[in-house]
Length: 628
Image (cartoon, rainbow, N blue to C red; front, top):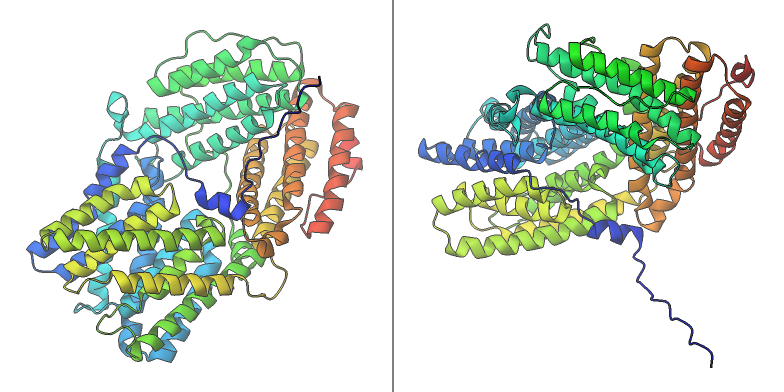
C-alpha cells in the first residue's frame, strides 16, 4: 500500500504593499527617549498655562512633538543637526505662514503654499535631515497660516524654536543607559564604533556561507551609523579631548579591517575560526574604554589574510596610543553641484512636484470647505495640508502603506481621545495626556499607524487645552480626505519617466562605484582616498537599496516602474565587493590575477546591458585600464 502524499501547507501570500503595512520595527524600548518625551511637550504646556500664555505653549508643544519624532537613537553630537536643522526650518515656515495667512487671500495663499511645497519637496531629496526640514517647514507654514492665535509671527516662531530647543537640551544633558559607566559625552559614539567591530567579526564568521552577503550589508549599515554618530560639532573646538581623538582613531582603524573582511568574503575561501576573535576583542575594548590586550594573529597564507593581520596590528596600535586624525572621518563634503543634482535631478523634480500638488491642493480644498462653512465652528483647515505633507513622504514607506496606516491610526487615536476627553479634568488631565503621548512617541515610531494614533491624541489634547471644543470627528474626516488626495496625486502621470527617485539613487551609486574602481586601478597606494571613496560607494548603494525596497512595495501600478532596479543594485554590490578584493590584492601582490580582471569585465558588461534597460547610468571603465 502506497504512502499518502503529503499535503503542502498553503500559507497566504500577502502582496508587498499589504505586508509592509503589517510590518513593525523591533528592538529594546528606548527608555532615555521615553523620559525625554515625557519631559518635553507636557511640561512646556504646563508652564505656559501657569503664566497665562497657553497659545504659545501649544506652539512650543507642537515643535517639541515634531522634534520628538526625529529623536532617534544615535550620538549627542549627531542630534544637534538631526533636531536643530528641521527646527530652524519649522520656525521659518511658521513665520512665513503666519504673515501670509494674515495678508493674503485664499488664492494667493494657496499659490504661495504650493510654491513652498515645490521647493521643500526638492530639498527633501537631499537626505534625511533635509527631508525632516522640508516636512517641518511645510507643516509649520500650514499651522501659521490657519491656526487662530493672538501672537505675531515672530512670537510664534520664537515659541516654536524654544520648544524644539528644549527637547534638544534634554537630549544633550540627560544621561542614556550605560553612559554613566564611562565617558558621559561619548555614549552613542562608543556603541556605534563598537558595533562596527562586531559586524566585522560576524562577517568573518560568515565567510564561505550564504549569510556572507547579508553580513557585508550589515557591516555597511554599522559603518554608516558610526560615521553619522561621529559627525557633528566637536565637543571642543579643536578636538583637544584625548577621548575624542581616540574614538576617531578607533573608527579609522576599522576601515582596513572591514576592507580585508570584505575581500575574504568575496574569495569565499575557508577562514580560521580565530580570525573573528580579534575584532570582537576590539569591540569590547571600545565599549569598556580599555586596552585591547594581546590579539590572536590570523594566518598569513593569502593576500586578504595578510591584510587582515596587518589591519589588526594597526588597530592594536591605534587603540593603545590613540593615534589617528581626529578630523578625518574618511568622508567628502557634498559640493554645491552634488546638492543641486539632488534637488533638481529626476528624483528631486518628481518628489517636489508631488509634494507641491498634494500640499497646494489640500490647502485650496481646505480653504474652500472652510469658507463654505463645512467645518462649522472649528478653525482647523490647516490640518488637511499638514496631514498631506506626512502622507506624501516616501521616507515613511510605500504610498498604500502610508495611507492605510494613517487612516487606521487617526481613527484609533481620535476614538481614544474622545474617551479620555469625556472623563479627564481640564486642563490638568489633558496636560498629563500630552505628557503621556510625548513619552509614547519614541516607541510608537516603530510603526506609522501607532505613531499616528499617539500624535492624534496629542494634537487633539492641545486643541482642547487651547480653548477649542472636542474635534475628533473633524480630525478623522480631514485625514480621510487627505488620504484620498494623496492617493490620487500619487498615481497621476508626471513629466518625465516615473521612478525618478530610484534611478537617481542608483545613478549616484553608479557614479560612486566608478570613482572607487577608477581609484583602485589608477592609484592603489593612496589608502586614505580609497577608504573615503569606498565608504561613499557603499553608502550610496545602501541608500539606493532603501529606495528600491520602498518602490517595490507600492501598488502594482507604481511598483512596475522600479522593475529591474534591484538586479542593477545587486550587480553594483558585486562590483564594489570585487573592487575591494582587487584593492587588497594589489596591496599585497602588486598586480591583479586573471580571476579579478575577468570578473570585473563581466560585471561591467552586465551592468551596461541591465542599466540601459532600466534607464540608469552605470560605471564605464575602459577594459584596458583593468589590465594596464
